[in-house]
Structures are given as C-alpha cells and as structure tokens.
Length: 162
Image (cartoon, rainbow, N blue to C red; front, top):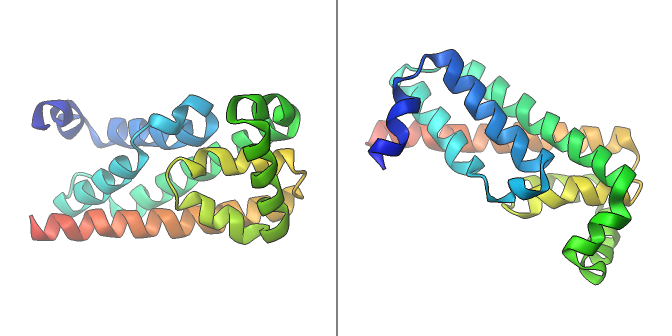
C-alpha cells in the first residue's frame, strides 16, 4: 500500500489538492466514477492535514468544491439524458429512485452524498426527476459540507492515533 501512496505523499501540496479534487469530482461527474476511491481520498486528505502536508481548511474547501462541482455536472447530465441513463441502471430501479427523490427532495440528496455508489446516481436522478435546481444545489452544498467535514475529521483524528 505504501508503494501506491508514495508518489502522492511525496508530491507538492498543490498536486495533492489537484489530484484529490479530480478524484472527488469525477466520482459523481462521470457515471463510471462509481468505482473511484473518494472516501479513501478524503480520509487521506485529513491524514495529510494532520501530518502538516496539507492545510485542513484548504483541504476542506477543495473537497467541498469538488463534491459540489461533480454533483452539478451529474445533475445536468440527468436533466438532459435521464431517460437514456435509466437503461443502464434498469428502468424499474431508476423510476423507484426518481420517486424517492421527488418524495424526499433535499434530504434524499443529502443522504445520497453519504452513501457510496448512490452518491454517483442521486444527482442524475434528481436532474431526471426535474427537481428544481435551487433545491438540488442547496441540498448538494449542504451534503458536501457534511460529508467532507465528517470524512476529513475522521482522517485527521486517525492520524493522531497512528
């Protein structure tokens, strides 16, 4: 594991921020991004902040901004190509997800951010279900703040134990 992380651990902080931002954004912005290790990425950012490699406040801002950007891109994709995307997931599952997002609204967006795999689909479903953009954006920002804060703090406090 150390050999996989060594290039990132030895890289300048700006490169670490950029790589982490790309991974976090790509998870939701790209449908195949579902396999990207965003949880590990944010935990690593918290760990590196404790070690002094990254600034915790800047790491938080990067994680939140990247998560929100990925959500916005996925929402727009769902808005424009929702019915086509449903073929990949299965029409019945897609319709159940749309019903849940329509019923629960912003809480569904917030919950979706906290569940790996689901976090990639919820913004697309919200766009497809024609959730008003302002409501979606508010939920996306709230979810990103909650998610990034929790994961960074876990990574940060884990570094204290190690």
